[in-house]
Length: 225
Image (cartoon, rainbow, N blue to C red; front, side):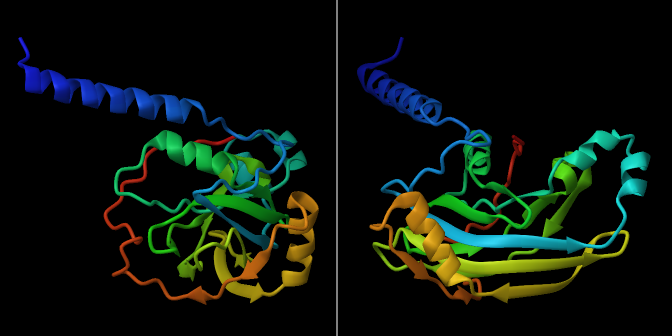
């Protein structure tokens, strides 16, 4: 039998597990066409745009992978990189994040990230890019920068990114980072109202000594929607 102290500890653990499960269950994946949600109290929304330019013919890859030609009717999509705020990350959390952080090529992104303790967000995981939205036609786009968000800022513009890929391995040969703040500001006000104030953020080198930079993280299953 459990003694009194062990019973208390067991009860606390059980309560924690139940609370975590209920919290996770309260979050649902975003479906295509759903209204974009404003950032919650513990979140920061990053705004920008990713466009990939590719001149390589995909017919060969579609045929060699046994894919149906009908996938050509679908748009290319990209998934923004997940930024961990703790060392142990549940696959469900990554799935929920990615369900609201994928966009069509050339479209502006509006993605909510859980706030870090320091206000520094380290973009070190790659951007996932799917030609015609198919997991068999996946490439990775580099991201290796940090964004420092001042306390109280909720909507942060980090710029427009253009990736140019070439060759059979779709290697990135050039990246352009440009400013379209006025266009982003107009979209933020249209979606979230005049009270939504958009700030700019400079892209900084990653500070590996910052406590918000998580090392030795094992990323588990990715979810695709």
